[in-house]
Image (cartoon, rainbow, N blue to C red; front, side):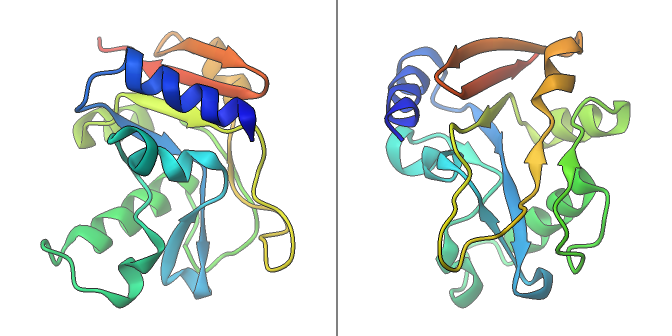
Amino acid sequence: MPADVQAMAWVREHTPPDARFVVNSHPIYGGDMIVGVDAGWWIPFFTGRRTNVLPMAYGGELAADPQYAAEIHALARDLRRRPLTDGQGVLVDLTLPETIERLRTAGYTYVYSGAQPIAGPGGIPAPDRIDTARLRTSPHFRLVYNHNGVEIFELVTQ
């Protein structure tokens, strides 16, 4: 979406190179892989920043760190608060105290919610989505970008 292209430029210009983003994601293949469900998945390619979602190829390639995929899966399970084998869509609440601590410990500093979930043939009918309404009311998150459906929040360090 054009709004996501504009947001990627904002991310490059207004976030540090070591910023880490939590993006909307969903388990697929019975929980064997985690995929992005909006343009947040493209942040590493367009901005050089890291996200909680690996490139799709991770399921068939060896990583430099053999524990990396396991860590990504554990984070996804912890954020959605359900097993990865449960494919039903979840409204993900990042404002829970244990979730905030988990994000801080893992080094995540931003949350990106894209303009539109990926849809179409082969898409996920009801993917997990981050509950941005809760982020807007939490003292732990600050809305730093809001344009044409894209929202970016900073995790406020306390």
